[in-house]
Amino acid sequence: MGISLVVNDLLNQGNEPMRSFSGNSVTDLRTNQVTRYVLLNCTLKLNELDGINRNY
Image 1 (tube, rainbow, N blue to C red):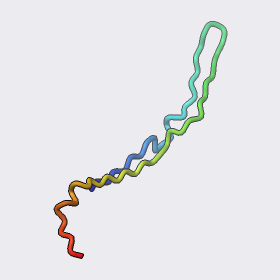
Image 2 (image 1 turned 120 degrees about the horizontal axis):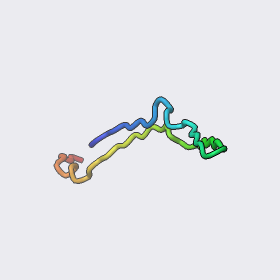
Image 3 (image 1 turned 90 degrees about the vertical axis):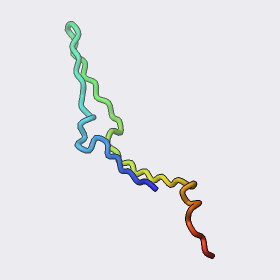
Image 4 (image 1 turned 120 degrees about the vertical axis):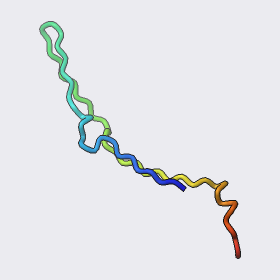
């Protein structure tokens, strides 16, 4: 059995606007996306349960 916890972009650094310059124009681009999330993963290998003594 395995358990893992993954936290992505905890400090919210992935939501920064981008500015580009081209000739006489300035373009500001800001996207709204999910960058901060928490993932809990539990893995259970069923073949490891064969060695368990089952007394019913």
